[in-house]
Image 1 (spheres, rainbow, N blue to C red):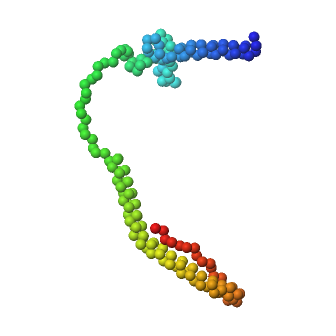
Image 2 (cartoon, rainbow, N blue to C red; image 1 turned 180 degrees about the vertical axis):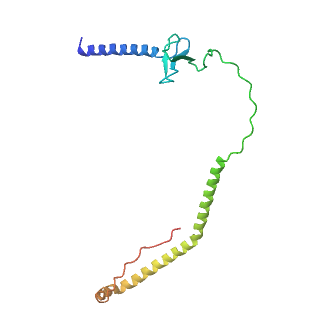
Image 3 (tube, rainbow, N blue to C red; image 1 turned 180 degrees about the horizontal axis):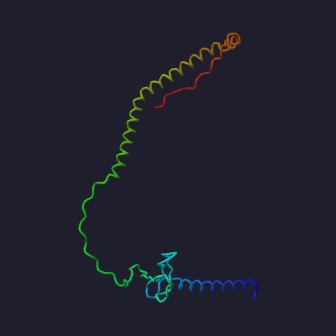
Length: 185
C-alpha cells in the first residue's frame, strides 16, 4: 500500500470517528429529558445565589442549598401537561377610536413650507430676468464698439506711434479686439 493510500485511509477513519463522536455528544448535549422537560438545580441560599445548572433528568439529586426546578421544553409552563391546543375563544369588544395622528401631517407641512420658500425665491429670480437681458444687450453693444475702435486705430498705425512715444509718455499699448459676444437665449 502506498503512502498516499495509507494517508487517505487514515484520514477517512479519523473523519468517521469524529462524526461518531460529534453525533454522540450532540444527542447527549440536548437539555430536554425523555419526559419532555428541562431539569435544573439552582442555588437558593448563600454565595452565588441564583446560579443554575442543567441536569440530565428529574432523578438527579441537587446538592445542599440547591433546589430542583423543571419546565416543559415547549414553553407550556411549570406542571402544565403537553396536549392539544384548545378551541379559539370569543372575539373581544371593538376598541375606541383613537385620536387623529399628526406624525404624517408634520412631514407634509414641512415639505409644503420648503416648496413655498423655493417658489418665492424663483419668483424673485424671474424679476431679475429683464435686468440681466438689458445688461447682456449692453455688453454686446460695447463689445462691438471696442472692436470698431481697435480696427480704426490699428489701421492708422497709431499703435506703433504710441509705442514709440510710450518711452516718453508711458502710454500702454492698445489691446487687441475682443472675442464676439452674444447673449444666451
